Amino acid sequence: MLDPKLLRSELNTIAQSLKVKGFELNCDEFLSLEAQRKELQLEAEAIQQERNAYAKSMGKLIGQAKANGEDIEPLKARGEALKKDSADADAALALVQGQLDALLQGIPNIPDSSVPEGQDEEDNIEVRRWGTPKSFDFEVKDHVDLGANLGGLDFDTAAKITGSRFAKMSGSIARLHRALTQFMLNIHIEEHGYEEVYVPYIVNADSLFGTGQLPKFEEDLFKLDDERNYYLIPTAEVPVTNIHRNDIVDSLPIKYVSHTPCFRSEAGSSGRDTRGMIRQHQFEKVEMVQFVHPSESTQAHEDLTAQAESLLQKLNLPYRTVVLCGGDLGFSAAKTFDIEVWLPSQDTYREISSCSNFTDFQARRMKARFRNAEGKTEFLHTLNGSGLAVGRTLIAVLENYQQADGSIAIPEVLQPLMGGLTQIS
RNA sequence: GGUGGGAUGGCAGAGCGGUUGAAUGCACCAGUCUUGAAAACUGGCAUAGGUUAAUAGCCUAUCUAGGGUUCGAAUCCCUAUCCCACCGCCA
Image 1 (tube, chains in turn orange, green):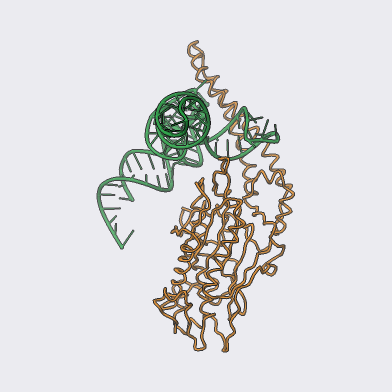
Image 2 (cartoon, chains in turn blue, green; image 1 turned 90 degrees about the vertical axis):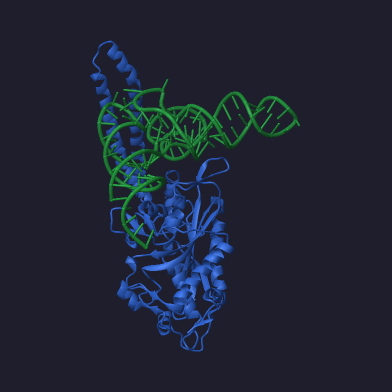
């Protein structure tokens, strides 16, 4: 959520910035609602003040009336009238405030000034490239064929158990998948200074509001069918960032890493990436989440992205990093770097990590604060990034490390986690 | 699943219908004293919203959350959530 005060004072500047994101802010509606709010709030508070003062004086008034043998009903009648006026004023205010809140909650975060203009992913700008795609002297297979030949990757059985967009892994491929998870967690804990956290995979609506998935993007989520309004997490970002909802934290930065499954309905992407495990309803991710001082978030964003990249370097997987253009930027993000890994079968780079700076947008929704140098509470900045998406990393390893005979060489850094195994055949 | 008991400021802990945003203690900050420290003493010390040039005043809200009763609710009633204890069941 944006700062309402900032919106009042710099409406036009903000509206201009939001255009980079392809969002048209209805300034007239905002100004009109804001004017109504101001008037109604002043009125409601004035009536409340009068009502409080009267109620406070009643103790004495009743005492006097009784001493004089007077009827106290007229005294009560005035109180009742004030109560009704107050309720009416509150209702009028609540109506306008509700509309204003809805408007406010639907406004995306302001893009950082360094975000390039553009409509969609075609306009994202490459900022760096690492490694050289390997040239194969044989016809490369994709991960689906490789996995089927090795007998460790099976989509038909998963479809029988559940339906489309699920995978069943077995044997060494299942183990490789687990080894990747361990590898990523270990590096972040040992080399990047993150604390590992284990969190619920089911969250309430407040948490989803805090990180920005609700109310606008409910269709992307799996919702549990009971009265509690619980949802399966679409990313660890939701439970991990919400660790500090309603908190005033003691010190910054705070860096958490968590391994969780992620569940996405993929409602808006039917027909896209239907083959293989690129786009699944259930996948695993190691996620980095940081809470930082506002002055540190730009640097933290660079660091976090570099930390995700370092995993691909250790795995010796070629990748490139792009900065998302305004039109491709998510609702809550001020700036996002996507890391794209090379997939030989597709002869292109595909997203394997998304690293975002949310500035104070999520923190304001969550009321996550710290005490600044003056001892005043201030909203902190939140960031997160995949480090990495495990399923897609598995795909990249299978495809980039495939041999002419269909076997898979195991990257050196993973061999200790695979019991010394050097290849899967 | 059942039966009880809880939830009050950073923490502990009073209050149980009328100057209570909330006693008291601890912690914390400033000052006095001291060579310095401790002790003692004095003062300060919540969050959010509004108004405003103002982080000055003033107003409003907040005693887990949401409803209700009342002229008036931290205090009474209802619901939810969480915690604790015991019983039952169970991985």
